[in-house]
Image (cartoon, one colour):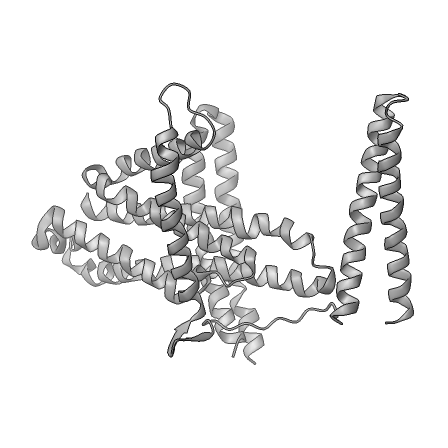
Length: 69
Length: 297
């Protein structure tokens, strides 16, 4: 039962992956439009990706807590 | 020792012998001189053969001697093991973090007294360039975020980054990284929380800080309190989850390879133990600075 719960918790990774893909796509677009601003865009992208990724990380922690006894 | 092991040892020994013989031969026939492109290609082939043969032989010998089966089985706990040192029960990770602190302290003293006096203004090179880039970018970054307090906070943030990177690198020596224990990361998160409130109150006063919490309407006050409390939790969980994830992937790789885990985990470790922690340290520092910036604005 715990294993099923852990697997369900990891479904959150879907949302995180989708969010990161959207952010990266927009970043690529804006770099293509304005290559000179790539440094700033890079740092903002990294921050946004980290924030989007953190939801997946929370799910991962919860899954670990469920799976490891 | 089964039939398969004998075959493996034979094949790997033949590979190794062929590779070494080929390398020695190509070295001795260099004086004769033939097409340099062809010779280069042959040398590369023999190098690959030598490396593969050596790796295979070492892996087979290790797995035969230690009777290690390759198969995926890992066991770990969320909290670290307790060690008994001089009658005190200490967590393994806290002992490792004390060791890392000592190493960083000794390194910084060595840098201060033996390497800094050799630095020159005119033609900087090598490690001086590296250090200058790191410190300068940190200073610039802190100045744009923290304005008046960058002088106080930039060294602390830099220290935090160095500690995180060193602790992740300790995993390369088979130890458990202190940042993969939630206690360490939570301590870092709580320090950030204290800094946010300290500098927020120092800049605006207690009244100003409370007023800032109820800025659009007093209705958002509980929300703001909640989001403030969520800051250290989210910082701690993010770092902890990332480091633990890296550790689990490395453990899986090592257990899946069994006795053959000689050279391949080191290559994977470049990403999971060196590159990934640097990004996580960067994110931790950036987020801490952003939150402090929010409080003092």
